[in-house]
Length: 427
Image (cartoon, rainbow, N blue to C red; front, side, top):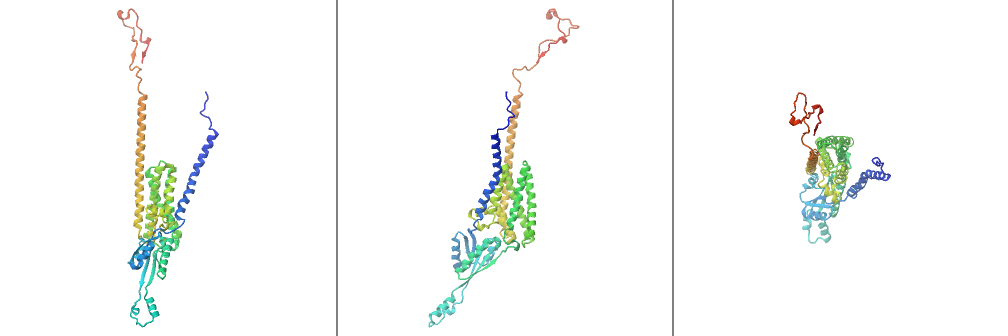
């Protein structure tokens, strides 16, 4: 008989295994190479306004047709009102991206109406021209909404002013800090603190794959406190405090901590589903969908419709727009975005707990089934053989003949054997 247990693997099998390992190693880089341009370039390649909210303020008979003309395009979602106070306040409160105020100056036309009949025609024409209304156009915008948004609002106002025969004045109601002239530093804070949240879970999964749920949430909780402090502290070396108050900075750090905890909770939930392949899900959910739609790399009003739809409900947008409101708009409009972020936080935590309990219940049922099957098997293995004797059978009497007179009827004259001559017993 030939022993084949120690036979070395065939060269072809070893080569096939090596190829599979190489392909598996290339899978994650390939994933990045494909998805990064697919997501980021599609979102940011051509900043064009899509339903940019615009308020036109002035007399209804003047601004009504202007607002309707703007609203009929795909670029703007325009409304109008005659309340001049709303022009500035609507932009400051972040209810619209920009506002165009049109005021009408109508000179007194008394001279034209009472001119003598003998006045020549040219004189009447000059007075009629003098009696025509003149307009003042004022644009209210916020560079803090994004420079491209501010430029789009100003361009629309300039076009309106040109149609009315005048030029537009510009008012920036929320200018950017001098140290944040591009308005992207808050987005950097969002991005870098995200890394701390999901990398904690990725690393923890590798070094302690059986870590308890409470351990994972504890790690995320620590990251949500430390990461905002470190990232903001380091960025403030160059950016400073944005000219914001101490309360605003504390608000920014608080919302950032909530965001980090949300991202970490998402990573935990994804790990519950995907296990060792969680890196793919985490990157897709937290990086490739979250960052392009957040409104930091490109303002939401200039994103394609698909990305605008994601912006309207995603957790990254909730954090990014909250940052803007707190730092540059005195907190105006922050409530709506904080609630959006908080809804994700609560939902992800609850979903993680439900999934964990479900998986625990399924595992316990599986263990109970295995133990029950093992118990039945052991019981079957030790069951006695029905053919085996169940008692001791004695085949011979053991008698010592010293001092004993045997009954001749029993022994028939034959001496009984002593105990030393025992022939034994059968079990």
